[in-house]
Image 1 (spheres, rainbow, N blue to C red):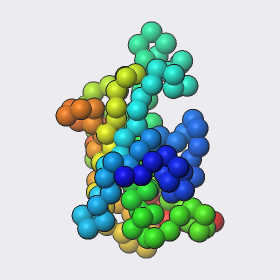
Image 2 (image 1 turned 90 degrees about the horizontal axis):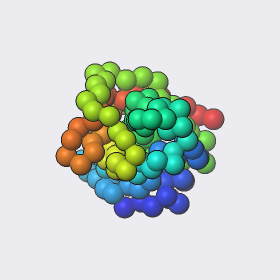
Image 3 (image 1 turned 180 degrees about the vertical axis):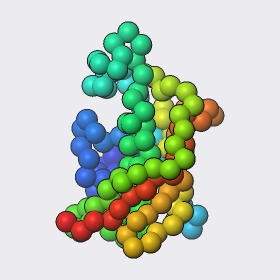
Length: 146
């Protein structure tokens, strides 16, 4: 398990864009991670999306999955952003949304390593609320030296 202090060592994001609250499982043998984001009504995006019916923007659900995948990738490489490497979200394939995410939900984020070739990493990702799948995608990240 990783708490927020350790997560901040693996992700360069900070409030309000750090979208992983905790890593619950990290299985290096299976090359998979399970993390979560607690969705609060106090999130800044809810003031405009939508004031009378707050829904977490889909792009932020994708970003949360990408951040979980980024932690997994950094762990697999044995690196951190402080070592001069970043993971940049560069695309997604097979993206599907199935239901909205609203305040009070806990977004469970699963990422499974699929492949890596010439600094391009691909992960199969899913976001769930409870046992309901809300989003799935193959997330593509590029490793970049900074």
